[in-house]
Image 1 (spheres, rainbow, N blue to C red):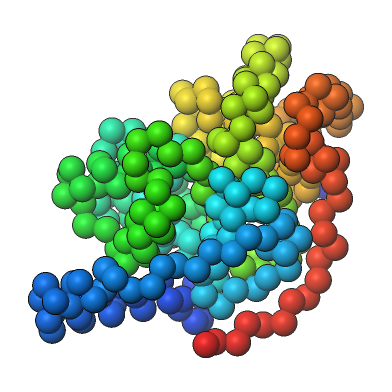
Image 2 (cartoon, rainbow, N blue to C red):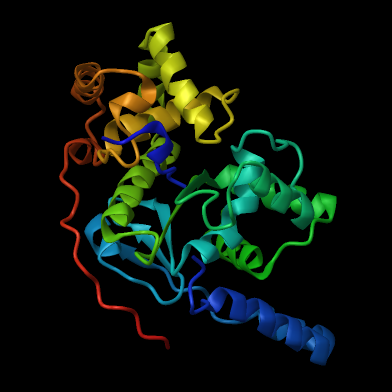
Length: 314
C-alpha cells in the first residue's frame, strides 16, 4: 500500500559533474583572460548536438553528460536527459519557480537567495524540487526575458539552456516547441522511476505542441464533476503546483491519470477515489482521445527496466 506521504513528485548530487558546468567555468576564465575576443570565442563554439530518438532509446540511456534529442514521433518536443538530479535542478528549478510552483511570483525571476529560500520553505532540495520538468517554448522565452529585464544573474547551467533555446529558435515570438527533461537512473532514481518520469513528461510535450490534444484535455477537465476536479486540484496542490492555474491543473491531471501508471507516483488513494472510479475516468478519457501518436501510449506497457552499465566519463 502506498500512502499519500510516499507519493513521489514528477518533477544525491552526482559524483561526476556534467559538461554544463564546464562550459560556464571555461567561459568565465576566457572572459577574464581575453575580454571581448574571448567572448567571441565562447559564443562561436560548436552547436549543441541534438539527436532524434524514440521513447525506448531515451529510456535505455544512462548519460554521463547532458544529452539532447528531438522526440522521434514529434520533433517539436525536445528531450534533455541529465546525468543527475542536481544538474537538472540547477538548470530548471528557477524556471519552475516562475512558471508553476505555488507561493512563488509569476511576474519576476527569483535571484539565488530567494530561490534557495523558496526551495527550503517547501521542504525540498535543488535535486528534489521536481524529478522531471516540462515547459512550452513561450514560457522559457519569457523566463529569460524577465531575467534580463530584472538583472538576475543566472548560473552556468541556465546559460547553457539559453544557448540551446537560441539554437532551436525558441527565443523568438511564436515559436512552437516543448522542452521535457528527466534525470539519469542514479540513486535515488531507479530505472523504473526513470521510465515513468519520461512517459509522464512525453504527455506534457504533446499537450504543448498539439492544439487538438490540449483542447481535448481541457474538454475532459471541464466535464469532470466539481468533486473530481477538487480531488485532483488538492492532490496537485499537495505536490507544490500552483492550483490557481487551471491550465496547469488540467495538464497535470491528464499526465498523472493516463500516463503515470505507477503507484509510487500516482494511485487512487492520493485523490481520495476508489480504483474503479480511476479506471472509469481513464477508460473514458482514452476512448475519446484524438487519434495521433500519443494515443497508443495511453495503454502502453513501459519498457522492462534493465540495469544499464554505468557511464564512462569522456
